[in-house]
Image (cartoon, rainbow, N blue to C red; front, side):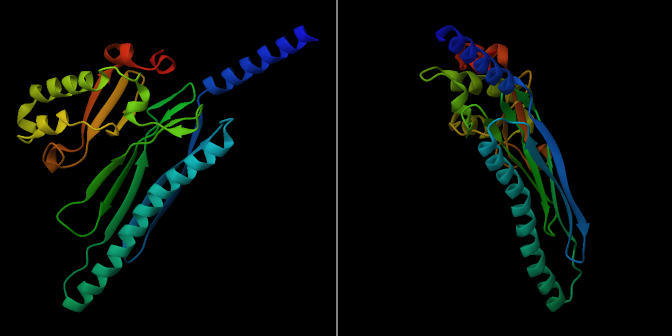
Length: 234
């Protein structure tokens, strides 16, 4: 009886491990239309295939909310600006809300899926924000950058040094205080994972002018592996 129970537990453990090691499935729900106020083009990711169904529902609600909140905010601004344009007698510029995403990492129950939100509300140009979405379906939690590394290690300084080295190679692209901003890197620094390493990034105007876009810096796993938690470093 004990032997049978042991074998059953081993089979169950292997099943769970195998299930978590499989990539999750990500499909797209699109919301696209144009009216007198705005153009809407939302590409909302939907995650499926996890054995952690409760966390999967939470993740899908969050990912949906990011895009729908963008639409609501732009629509609110559009209505206000439309009223002003009619009152003042100047042309109204069609507003826009666009969301896109990319699955950059999808292994061993870890999903990295940054969402890009673009809004245009009638100014000289639109604004783009990249939202970091990093999830561990094993533990059922969102992952901040600090969660990837062993406590007490100097991982943050390693990342800072690498980012500063990359900035110095194209120094003319950046604000004078870019290095100072990087040196104050918080524990919740925006990032996403790829098969090659971790990409930390800075939003528009954070360390460079608008024309330079969102600045991204790849830190290879080969550099970070000694400091990472074991299951993430494989």
